[in-house]
Amino acid sequence: MTDVLYTPDALRQLQQNGSAVLIDVRSEEDFAKGHIPGAVNMPDIFTYLAETSESGLASLQQKFSSLFAQYGLDGSKTAVVYEDALHTRYGASCRGYWILQYLGYPKVGILDGGLRAWQTSGGTLTQDITHPAPTQFPLSINHALMATREDVFAALTNPSIKLLDNRDKVEWLGESSSPYGVDFAPRKGRIPGAVWIEWYSFMHTQDQEARFKTPEEIRALAVTRNLYPDDDIIIYCFKGARAANTYVALASAGFTKLRIYMGSWNEWSRHADMPIEDGVPRASVPYRPQQG
Image 1: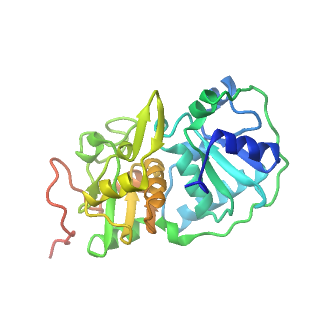
Image 2: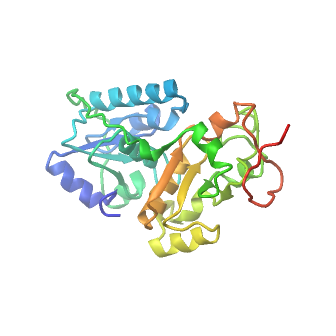
Image 3: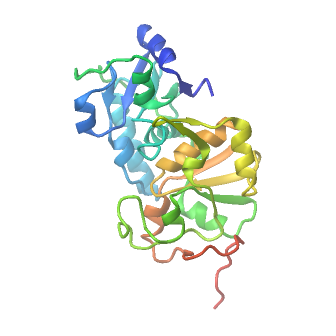
């Protein structure tokens, strides 16, 4: 995925050309301690909880197009998003990449290996603050990337659409409602009929750095859950960050019909009329509404 994942050296080349906007998705506190020279800080990419109603999507679009405009993303510069490492902040850099794609930004990538790879390669950090000139963000929504709560509910009775849950094991089993606390969300469990591949499984991790597995390895993992490159797949987690990490992994392996349910479990669990399954997983069969 040379067009998505940028090595530290490739990022340096972009910076030398003055054609990069580097977006750090870590917290304000971590950013202040040290960041890649020239980077701007946007923790909202990680913390934002989306609703997929019409008004919720409008709010998401307005919020992030405005933030990206403030940081000088005019369509001519390449946005490169980074976090600590690909496995440390629940896929936040991939979430930033996916949000920019959803908003229709033409040039966007991810720093492969994140801040740790940058430092390992000899890159320095700074505490200096960069102030880009605000611009007009070229908003052009790519609706094909987004799955709404209504889309997911409809998929429960549509065998041609597959649901992939990539949350941590305790969430999949209904032992915890989120990564932020056992009872952060009102209900625990999973969406009926979804298959599960924990998001870490798509990466190799060594010396606190993570890299995506090869396309062959990713396809081999996916087929164990009956997922194939031509399938229509909706990915969900808790808020769409880990799902974005898996989205990048599957896309690198040739999967072409991928959507993220951006509201994910945070939204689904807060609607009492949305069905859930909990406990030890039962067979993944299409959901059938109760009669009467």
